Image 1 (tube, helix red, strand yellow):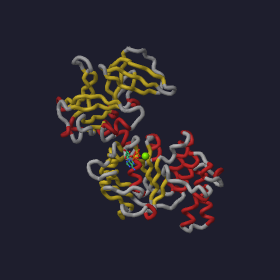
Image 2 (cartoon, protein in one colour):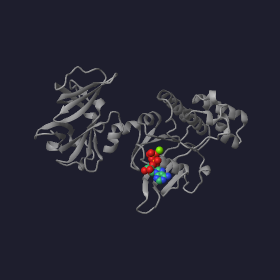
Image 3 (cartoon, helix red, strand yellow):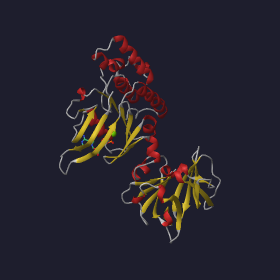
Image 4 (spheres, helix red, strand yellow):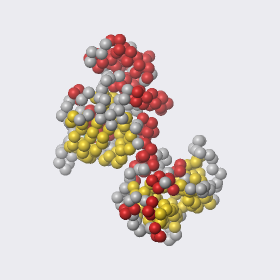
Amino acid sequence: MASVTLEQVSKIYGDKGKTGNRAVKSVNMAIHDGEIISLLGSSGCGKTSTLRMIAGFESVSEGAIRIGDRVINQLKPAERNVAMAFEGYALYPPLTVSDNIAFSLLRNKVPRAEVTRRVRHVAELLEITDILQAYPPTLSGGQQQRVSLARALVRDADLYLLDEPMSQLEPQLRAVLRGRIKEYLIEHRMTSVFVTHDQTEAVALSDRIAVMSNGVLQQFASPADLKERPANLFVAGFIGEPAMNLMPARLSLRDGQLCAVVAAQAGSGEALRVSFGALDRIHPAAALHEGQKVHLGVRPHKVVLGHSPAGTQAARGTLAFNQWQGDQSHVGIDLGGHTLLVVTDGAVDVDADQPVTLGLPLQALHLFDSDSELALVHGTDLR
Ligand SMILES: Nc1ncnc2c1ncn2[C@@H]1O[C@H](COP(=O)(O)OP(=O)(O)O)[C@@H](O)[C@H]1O
Ligand SMILES: [Mg+2]
C-alpha cells in the first residue's frame, strides 16, 4: 500500500514540439494511502493516458509520478509493484482461469494452500467460480474482464489500476460487483485508481473523483463536494443527472445584498431574481462586482414545485413540458424564455402554459463567473 503523487504530469503523443498531441496537461494529484479514487470524464479526455503513465506503459512526457516517496518515472512496469486490469492487457491463453489468477502469487512464492484460498475468494467475489478450469479463449468478453479483474485484485501490490474494468458486464451484475469490490478494497486497504466514464460508477466506488476534461484535471474531490461545491462551470454541468440548470445572469450588490438577476429572453423584464443575502456572509466577496456576468446554477432535484416552503425563494413561471419517467417527473418551467428543468418524485398535474410557483432553496443555488467559469458562491457555504 502506498500514496501516489502526480506533479505537473503531462503526456504529449508524437512530436514534443508544437505538433504533438497534448493528451494530459500538467495534472497535479495526491492520492492517499488506502484511498479509492476514480478518473472520470468523457471519451478522449486523457484518463487512460494518465493511468498508463502511472502503470509504466507510457512514458511521462513532463512532470513526476511518485509512489510513496520514490519517483517512478524511469521504472519498468514490473518494477513498480502495481496491479492492473486494462482493456487489452491479455490473459495467458494456455493457462486455465485459475492459473491465470494464481500466476503472480505463485511467482512470488506464496504457499499453495494460501494461493488456492485467495483465488477461490476473488472468484466468489466476482462470480467466476464456475469457469475456474476453463481456458480464456472459450470465455465471453464479460467473463474475460472479470478474470482480468480477479488477477489484479488477488495480488499484494502497492497500487491497483483498473481501467473501465466492468465495461462489458450487464448493468445489474455491475451494480452488485461494484458494492462487493468496494468492500474488498476497503477491507484490504488497497490504494486504487479506477478509470470510468460512468459517474454513477465513480460515485459508488470512490472516496474522491478526479474529473477530467480535455486533458485538464477540473476538480479532485469527494462525490458530495463535486455535487454541492463544483469548482467551475464544467464540473457543475458534468456531474449530476439530469444536469444542473445554468442560466446567464447579472449580479446586483445594492444595499449590501447580493442578488442574481436573470433577464428575460425577450424585452427588458426580469425572468428571475434570487437573493443570496447580506454580502458580509460571503467569502471572498471581493471577487464580486455590480453587473458582473455570472451563471446562476440550481439542480433539477432541488427545486420545489407548486409552492415555496420556508427557506426557499418564490419564483413564478409557466409549464413548458411535463414528462412522466415512470418513477419521477421531468418538468420544464418557462421563466421569461429560459427553461428551468425540475425533477419531482410524483406525477405533476399541471397543463402546458399554466402558471406554476417554484421554491428555490438558497442552499441549492450556485454562482459562477461567466468569463473565468470559476465558482463564486455556493449556497451551502452561506448557512
Ligand atoms: N498511443 C497514442 N498515440 C497517440 N495519441 C493517443 C494515444 N493514446 C491516446 N491518444 C490520444 O490522447 C487523447 C486521450 O486519450 P485517452 O487517454 O485514451 O482518453 P480516455 O481514456 O479518457 O478516453 C485522445 O485524443 C487520444 O486520441
Ligand atoms: Mg480510456
